[in-house]
Amino acid sequence: MKKILTVCVVSVFLSGSAVFADNVGAGLGRVLLKGNRGKALELVGTFLNNICGNGTFAITTGTLGYHDGASIGMNEEVKSFIAQNMDNLAADMAKGDGEYLDTLATLMQVEDKAEFNSKMKTNFSNIYTSYGVSSDQVAENIYKVTQS
View (cartoon, rainbow, N blue to C red):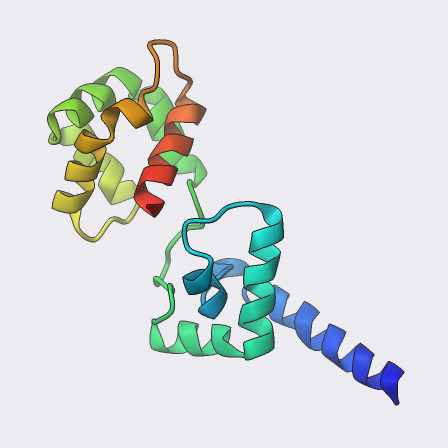
């Protein structure tokens, strides 16, 4: 009996992970672990979402961290835009406004562009950390700032 129960629980956990692959983290796990990073914490978040059954609720109701069509982290289009526009993007971030910053916000599907622009300006030195900073590092730093 214990083996059957174990197989059932594992099956539910694994099937839940596949169901949420397009929106990993929607649910209570996302809310409780917001701002934390790492594979182990992502697994814990996914486990919480699946075990509590609230991932489906989050997707259905649009709550608990679910954003329709949102990407997890930085997608390739955003990274490519950052890489191709490093200097112009830096100039816009430094002043907190501009075409390149607006385009970045659009690509990232930001809802409140004024708040986003303000965050980018306030955290400019945390995003462009040195003269030779790579575009990948800038993307990572933008992600960190937007998650805080």
